[in-house]
Image (cartoon, rainbow, N blue to C red):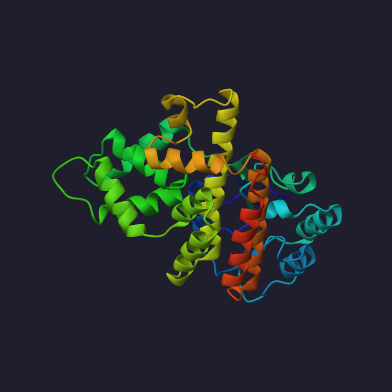
Length: 340
């Protein structure tokens, strides 16, 4: 269970793909997605079907039933269970474990979560190379990733440009790849990319984003926040995409609050700010304003709300999306720290 191998027969043809259980955890979305794509690639020679579940939205009993009673018209079936940290109850875990043990070699199941550990029984379903945690990149890794991206495109970028990108884009390779690719469409040729280029073109190309929405939340302007949210939704931004960006902002706010606490309430120095990805005046203003409205407990509550509404908006299938997101923003405002 969990650690069966991929392989080839003596004629070089692919064997029947063995049942595998994989657990991919952590906040580094890009590398986690690459790991999932690698499994899809290994299955590409087979006639396989794919089913995606969102734990918390789909009951464990339904997941188990789908795994055991999958289609007989495909050579293999790939099941992906997102938000797997939501599977917590012993009876749910026991049900999932039983269906995997009872299954044959005709399916692969991947459990995904932004957390670093699942509930004990579930976390033990995969080991070794089948269980991986993908952490956010360290500061030097982020710098080198951006520099290398532009180098591969035949461009150079100075350190101030890199810093600006890292402040405006979520800390994962998927978001960085997407936004840097978009930035290339606007950049002048013949010179190194500079901070002015990033601020002008990345902001211009994005217009409204989860980051501008967070800026309005940080300032305490509810009406402007709702206006920003509606602009995003009208531009066909998805609720899960907006919530993912806000989750990133709230995690960074948490790091900033911890830094403030360790500095005895005084303003941290520029080196400490840069270490957590805050160096531009605009970013400092936003997070300082947010720190006046939310303490660590309030930020944790905001992160819990963000995860909850991620599930709710996905479960709605697009119905009532604006209403759900309006309620979410109002609830975020209600988490502000009183008498701070």
